[in-house]
Length: 183
Image (cartoon, rainbow, N blue to C red; front, side, top):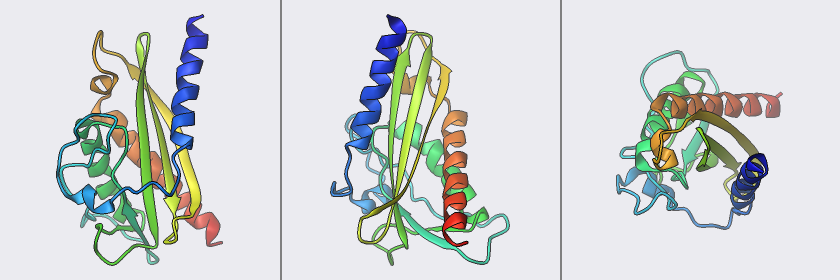
């Protein structure tokens, strides 16, 4: 019975994320506004811009990407994710451009959910890579499991290291997708 309830919750979360269309207006400039989210279900911009870090080797051909505000996660959860994306992207040949600047080649929209499941919290993530016309070109999705804290909001159970793993997987999958597209 418990396993069926868990599968049902995961299915509902996946369906909610997959129902998100590219016609939804997420203002990418909100990513850089530093405004806190009103509630975890609302877009939660990180406290600072996703600016390229000045460390590490950079590939000769760079992808220019703009990241929209992450939907569904708290500011506390998004902060380590954003930092790690900012560090890893330039090392892997991805230039993260701020909203309102010269647009990037791609817009990346992220959707995250944290679901309590007994003694665990499951973090489900979905990233859509869109072209400048808003067409979805690629979807990255996955999940991470962590030990849950008793009685806590599921997001409070998610350590920074888990969000950093999600960032690493995201950058790795963007690079793999780009490489496969370009030959």
